[in-house]
Length: 441
Ligand code: NAD
Image (tube, rainbow, N blue to C red; front, side):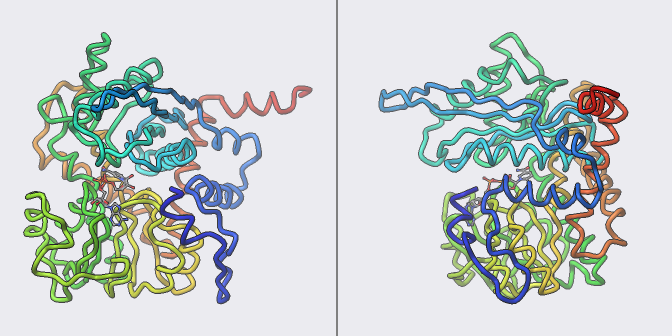
């Protein structure tokens, strides 16, 4: 996301290592850089690479929205379906001022790799509307959600593209989206995951991503010969992902020494009471004003701790922060919080990164189980779903325990790409490309 990244990354040089100065500064460039390196390592031919590279479908619509002051504002809205190779495309809808078609495209690709990595029968998609939900009324957001659904309805559906919440949207938004589809003659809970429980949502979905991040953190620490109960952690972001990561890590005995949200950062080296902070924030008070903590003026990711979990936005862990960090492990709770240049810096300092595709996969795994329950017209107890989600994460992690930690991201991408290529090949897609590429054979 440009606003979060260009200012701190642009044109930086690092004299020590090969940390690239000319590092591209948006998520789409980062995704492309990592993808190109992975396909080069896998030795894939150009036709296959082009199949993997381009989106199956990319839709831009324009939505006239009635503002509360009586004016009409036309907002663009995007839906990108990167891949259907393994099943219906799957991905969230983001309401955030910095949403661009490029970021949505990059995020849709990330979803393809994430669902493939965890063995889910889904492809990858993402959607978004550039708007600031903090400056809009519920009525305005309701109208945006309904207009969005009506705009994308021709290309979405339980077997085409399954919607979900993301930054700036919630279960409530998904309830509105589902209602809009029903009003348009397409009532179907399977169209949307992350919806309210009363409309067929899962009991575990809201906490699944964060609890999954905590679970993967525990597994990664174990792989590194450490334990979560003896570790200190700083978490950036106190939303759906950050809050549940912090709560679960604290539940598992970790000492949470730093927390941050948009209002600022707080720390306490003897450990923060995450449950009390959660209640404080729920009462509508700013996290940064929580009384039993000190205010930390820099990035929360520079607080000395065994683990840092960036779980707010993309691009927050910059080269400068990678240089200043005093940690042993970075776990990507958010999508794309560590730029490739920052990751090279961390690698040169021997600090491994658990990539987003592994770390926050609990969210889409839980969405998958929600979709399965909707197909079966049943509701599982929350313990059953939790066990299934964490079990799937265990399976995924078992493929990383023998991998050199600084190669976790590359390995995850290689596994995911390999899986998608196998599906394309099994469906005869790659042979078709070859024939077209060599018409005389
Ligand atoms: P959210 O809107 O619930 O929370 C975002 C949090 O980040 C808020 O606490 C906000 O105050 C904080 N924040 C915003 N700007 C900040 C800044 N500059 N510094 C510090 N904190 C800041 O969003 P979320 O659902 O928790 O998503 C966070 C990230 O995780 C996104 O990258 C999203 O794509 C990714 N993700 C979310 C899910 C999910 O299930 N919600 C699943 C996978 C990935």
